[in-house]
Image (cartoon, rainbow, N blue to C red; front, side, top):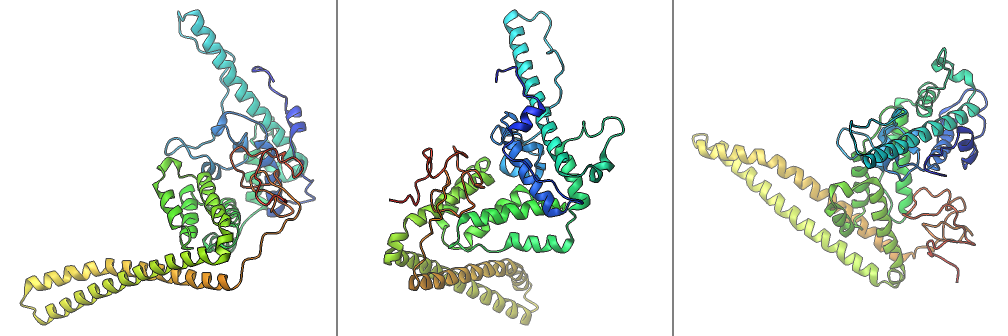
Length: 413
């Protein structure tokens, strides 16, 4: 494709990797969600420099609240994806500009116009695919009298369908938040936590109660931290610059952390690694127990001072000191609660590790599949194309027969 050529909506539609199945009758939340998943895949398949240049035209389908979690905005109060506007037929060239500068203005304008036109055509293709899937009668209320659907964004049409036919009850949103906050079992793949967080975020957005990008990161971090197994990796995460602490880098960081633990599985089964880990957790427990004991002594001492002050009402300075101490005790008590919480977490983790030593973990099964990012030991429905947590340089076309230089984890000898 030359720098000036732009494929037509029909050509783009033909190039889409997936085609949705016609929805019979009135759409539901689940049928709309399936449709949206396909439209997301198709939108992302057409390259562009917009929205960070990594996820194609995905911003034409995803709401801003979700797109901002995968591509953080450059500036506070802005969004990572902004639909381009028509730059006009001709560039604005300053008077008396030299010839070489005029050429630059024209080239830049042509590229901006090409990017805008491609975005328009991709949206048209997505809109047509949506209209081929959902009966027009269910979109009749937003059809314009003179222009029909031609001026509407596919993203807005989807949002309307979800609002009218994919309603989510407050009870369902409450249940979804519980799933969002549910602890993660670190013996399960990290991908399970990723899928649960992203699914809960998407569901909350559909229910008009979206989680912010910061809420997603904070909750996911807490899940990992509370396992008691990734303290060093959590420390490294917090040392990253703020602009590097994105959802994508979080996933990559802790996927690699868990993969490193898997590589140490052989020594763990021999008992050596497990022993070191038990000693580490036991030491953490002892430290927290000692900190808790000292905190209790401080609170007890402050309480005794308060009682003594009450018995000596004439001693104004003592009462003042005791009152200030009582105020400080509230903060001390909160800290004590935190100590006790961490002590419980670590103790439970120690017990779990002891049980794991008694019952060796079953090796992952080879289902005959392959994923460029995760290797050979993936579930039957997990392929390079369907992978939801692709590593940098991921190749959708990679297969077991032609892994295209992808992951060699679990490769049969």
